[in-house]
Length: 282
Image 1: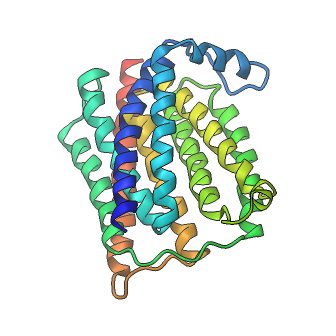
Image 2: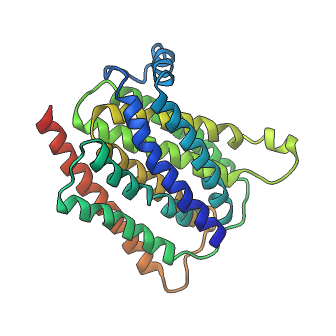
């Protein structure tokens, strides 16, 4: 458990720093960029010309290596709770480097999200046994198609709400990464290459990364990151507990529920206030 949690926290730091680098690189690309298949190649090519974006890509890949270790050793909700600490790293760096300004209420909401996720960590039990789940695999594939379609629609708008929506969809994409990693089976190389989740994992990650870049173009780093962190934490947590057999410690269900509620409330506060500030500056 200690190794897995340490890997999750290390990944959180890399993801938090990477979010700032990704914001710097994304904002140097024209904001009329959309998730349009006809323009996607050009958009990605422009992003890859930005050194900051390449740095963000490297940080995220290194972070995923640590995150993958956590996903294989911990219950999904605990692995994702550790990753959520990146929200604090991102918020701290954004206020210093990206001219984001958070009020006392918003800072309280940031730490509320982290405290809520910390409650989930304390309430964690044993991870369920890894197993193939064909229904869940189909759900991931359908979800990816839905996320791509909704992302394409949301990316057509420069409205503050589109920042939060794109961040939310990115969070669902990263949730697909976590669930796919959990469903990967230990076995022969042949069995691994025949597993659909070997392919949904990188596709989910790439789609989420692009959606997050689009979100960072349109609004503050905090507005884009908060719904992403919340959804990429809560979605795999629910799947782990209710489908994959991840356990909650006996008698700790109230703490787990309180953790979810606190995280959700903090996320709503941040999205609401950051969206209002974005509209005032447009």
